[in-house]
Image 1 (tube, helix red, strand yellow):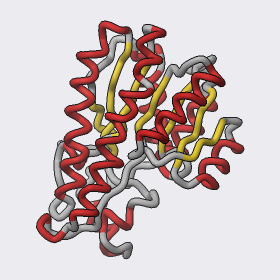
Image 2 (cartoon, rainbow, N blue to C red; image 1 turned 30 degrees about the horizontal axis):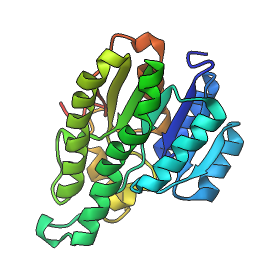
Image 3 (cartoon, rainbow, N blue to C red; image 1 turned 135 degrees about the vertical axis):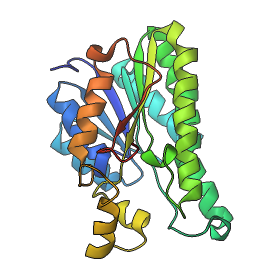
Image 4 (cartoon, rainbow, N blue to C red; image 1 turned 90 degrees about the horizontal axis):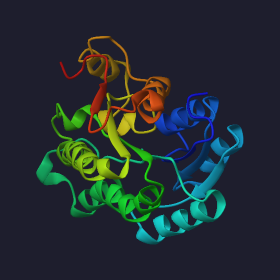
Length: 246
């Protein structure tokens, strides 16, 4: 029960890595607000793990403001924020990605962290405590071809994590990131362009431990970094990648 009596927000919590994190946090004693643009997905996960579902587009300030108001009214604040929601563009040369695709990737993967800071960080500052975990990617450390702007958005998130950690440390707030390698989640086909046994084998061949990451892998790392066991760790971008970035 490492997260007993903690209140946690998990964005993109309706599937994939986010759902795995919600499950682990619940098992460790946290009350989880499951945030997802898909309300049905958020409700399904919240119902499974005795949490609260909240529909939001994390690229919209008004949705973050509504979430912050709900959390303040219901729980008086929040202990943990996991910025997990993310999207990608399909693999293609950088000059062929449309402006709309670029804007959407940056809005969901980068701007959402800025909006979370504007709306959730003030509550943590008031409490002089809190943990923020950003789900970045190995793509921000060791980029793959034809995913240029997704790579850039995750590199941005890693740098933002370190900058946030420095600024928020005097307020008792820790900020870390995890860098997963691709997992068998709804985004996998988008990363690969097509999902065939041959493409999967080629992708897995770049991971020394020889498998995709799982929601459980991400959840275990997230739980540690968000728990008091990691009370001296801030500004870290932990690679949970089976050796992909070596």
